[in-house]
Image (cartoon, rainbow, N blue to C red; front, side, top):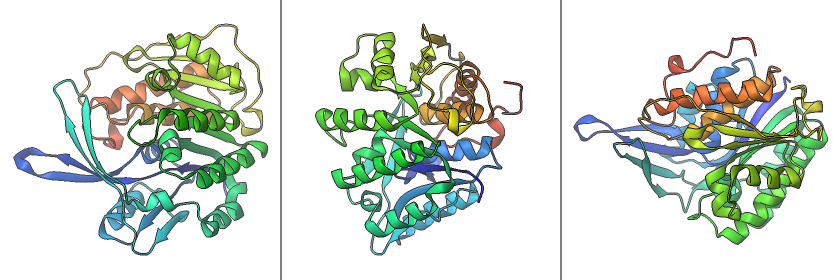
Length: 324
């Protein structure tokens, strides 16, 4: 089977207000958003979503959306009697969004059961890139967190990439627990795609450069620190080949490199970081430098924030088919 991109997390049903008091629904969630944009940018790469859903109507709608986006759902554990998570978005005049969640009973919290882990283990050799996030870890119990990091370590040991987005949500877990598990996850990842704002909340970092140096010191080969409207800062591993077997060479750059964001008027910042991740990884997979990959990630994020909702029309995305 072809080398695949596995994205692990919780996909929820998104409700977004429309005109005349109606609501539109979509599938969304940080790891799912990245999976969708990665599949659109690299259509020939199998993209598989790893999670758990129920057998309820909302779970069915989520799977319908996945099929529409050509996301493989065969690694989703379907739990009889389970339900999917749900959230609603409200957006202010500046494009900033507020969320209301109904996810406490989400079936995704029960993913990585013994049977599910056996299924994943049997197919793990195909995984070229494994993506997980702070939200993925936050919704799991300690046993499942440890199991997920064990899978990640196996992927890295086999020469694959492990991409980690910090995505810290204080409502999901306390800062002490989050810091412990995120540091453990960073130790097995090859690509840290972190938000500086989240690192401030987790570690109290005073500057992006200081945060980047701390993360690289953990042993992360490639670090991208996302700075919102200010773009991102790149450090950790130096330029290296994009093939998985070369992803973890610890060749540290002397100085961090700043890549500016594109100036756009944001309509909705939902999935800005998630889409950046997809653009960045898509370019790295095709052999682009980390700087070129970050520039493209910023371009993808700029397109996404000028449209409402987490998943924008495919035609609005920039093309990957340019020289890196």
